[in-house]
Length: 141
Image (cartoon, rainbow, N blue to C red; front, top):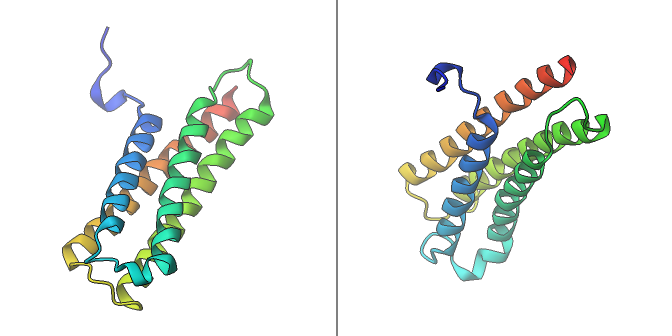
């Protein structure tokens, strides 16, 4: 039996997919020497890459913890903490990209810059909805 599209709850997979896509897009941009010259890569590229990868890892780890009444409450709390930690990494990523564009004057096109920041915002919004949904579901267990 199929579920009506509006009633489907795929937030955890959406969050993981968006995070993976954001991580891949970030790595693709960071490898471009015209955007991020080698002489300055150590300064900003490594923290940007680490933030994108860390957010993705937190989301994958959170997704591996199942929501069920038989699961240890400490694990359920850990799932919520990992989601919040991933949101922190998104905030760091957003800030670092803004600094790279505005203060360090890397050669990001305005369209790329806006797309990158909007991608972070949309991934964070899906993650927030997932966290809110999990919080409600854990309270009901």
